[in-house]
Image (cartoon, rainbow, N blue to C red; front, side, top):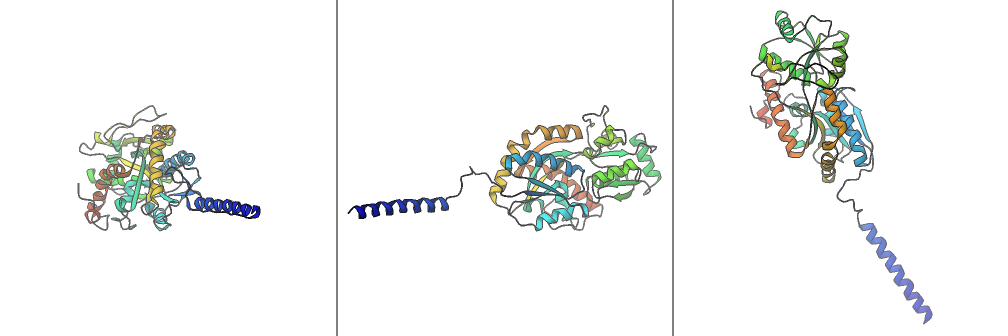
Length: 345
């Protein structure tokens, strides 16, 4: 009888242990709805090191790492105006561990330019951090003291003044095409693998000017190695460490309607929803309150403007709509923007 009782007790204990193990095995860890990455995340910067995308992506990655609890690896993969690196993200497994970065306008015009078959609204989740503006800056050894001087030279020497940009559809190229549209000037387009190389080429005298982003030119402007003549905005530009202000392009082009050139991190649709939910929480709790991102924007002449989701799509639209039709009307786009859901302004 005693043996039977002991056996019965042993069987009961064993059953309870088995039940506990089975329950534990079948139950997922409670993460409070937050994605817990199990390996490093890769962000592809589709431009060269040191440029505007590289700069702000590294700042945001550093802020996000503690929140996500994993390392974020930045990989620079320039080529074809950013479309090569972006295609690497398109082709990567949709497991949430490979993200893109850059300007929303680039993502939006790749398809109409025939560079990459992707749709900004259908294929991507946008997490925007800052808005950048373009500056027309010249090598200080050139004779151009004012923007009037530069415009006069463009008109007197059509197609002869070398202008350095990060390539077709880059921020600098957009700025020059806007200037060409409103003034009729022609220029000699010299392309580089990113905004930073274009700025360095201007400092070195390889080209006479660059219309790249203020964030890429700020250090050289502060150091007196680039002379800023105008900013593509309707407001003067000031930034930390620069005592003057850069006059707005509307001083010369009265009817120009500026737009916000938003930059950020882009995650392809099709990844697990928990990845997007967690990134939305991270953007709201971390990036929207980031002192480092605010300081970066202040030092680089950018606008602190974090936003995500549908609001990010709406904010990006105004600028890329204008740019898409600018390229199409200039004969640089291969298909009409309205065929990919971008109506004419």
